[in-house]
Amino acid sequence: MTSSVLNEINKRSKLQSLNLDQNRLQKFPEVVTQLSYLRQLHLDNNQIRLPATIKNLIELEQLWLGGNLLWQLPIELGQLTSLTELHLGKNIVHQLPSELGNLKRLVSLNPGHNHLTKIPSQILDLRQLETLNLEGNVRSNIVTDFGKLLTSRVRLEVALEQADVAQEGSEVLR
Image (tube, rainbow, N blue to C red):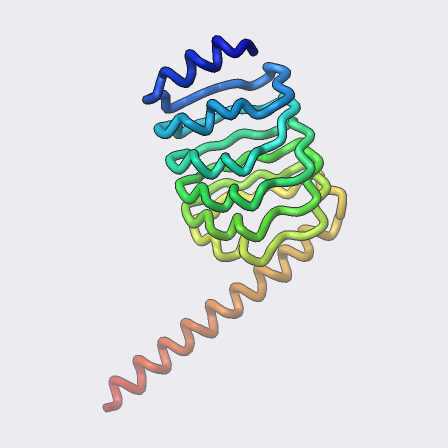
C-alpha cells in the first residue's frame, strides 16, 4: 500500500469503517491510529503486529485481525473499551492478555485456531460476552479449563444470589 493512499485515509478524519484485508501489509499503518471516528477495522490476512498505539482508537467497536501470524497481543488492546467484537482467529497467539477483561462491552471474542495454553480468569468478568470461539487451539483441554472457571463463576453467582435472598428475608423479619 502506497503512502499516498495512507495519507488520503488520514484526510478522511470522519472515516468510520476501514477494510485493509489481504493487502500484504508487513507493518501496521500508524496513520490508522489517528482515525478517531473509526468504529470498524478489518486487517485480516496481512502480516502485521499490533502497536501499542492501537489504544488511540477509542471509538473502535469491531476489530478483525485474523490470519496475521500474531504471536503476542499488546496489553493496550484492553483500553479499547468500546469493542464489541474482537476476531483473532488463525494466528499463533499463545496467551490472551488479562487486560481483555477491561472490555466490558465485548459480545464476541474469537481466538480460535491459535496456540492458546490458558484463558485468563478476567475473561469471566465480561458479562456481555455471548460468543467465545476456542476452536482449534493447541491445548486440547483449554475448553475444560474454561469450563472449570465458568463453573466457579456460576457457583459465585449462586452464592451471591443466596446471600441476597437471605438478606432480604432477614429484612422482612424486622
